[in-house]
Length: 336
Image (cartoon, rainbow, N blue to C red; front, top):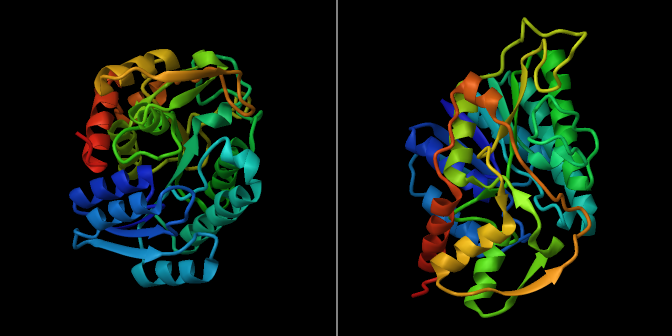
């Protein structure tokens, strides 16, 4: 079976691609390896993937429709996992147009070609950020997600709506996965865990916005990957019990699904930082700052749907996850 994975050199994309290769799938990896963060990290991920005989890599941006068409025509994939996107909540305030290109135009290109080539299953990355101004905790897929508080979230919610339209028009099975604060080895340097670790080891102060009074549903990367693989193996189906009088936005009469992928646990940012100090065996120097524009104070998932329907079960708690990250960080950067 041939699977296209876009964003294959990204944090989640790398882990998903590697897992699919370990499961003996043929994987066509697409990535533009842009300079949003350290290119070396992306290239080192790619080196690992290239050791697999069933991995075929193409350096392209998904907003470039012509080379994308050629790839679909050449490989004739059965499944598409779209993880390519311009990431970063705060960066979307500074560089909004890059989100329009990658997250909207690029997403449409991949979705449209998936329809043209009669893909059996289209799985894509959404985000917990779509819940935006919602304060109904824990976040449930059927909750209203139409009040984003930054453009990144708006593009991800748009992806879900675009996918639904193609499920309805063309009977294309689509599954959107709302990731909750993914972290772990090979993570992104713009994420808090990476920044905190780097600054603590360099004895630099870290910025703790909202004075650390945030909580997040930290989800370890292997649990994120498990959820994606389950979605790959279980294409969305029509929901015969769907009630038009009480519509559930996470499901549909058409082959369309949305799932939360989270740990289903709240972790305060201060606790997260203390775990990091414990495994680094160093104390952090902290700048306590007010809430930053675009930030959500509390993030907490309810994962009953994916547990019930796909048998998803997160396995790695935050203490083990932070420990694993620190071990990887020291290994990768050759630190004693």
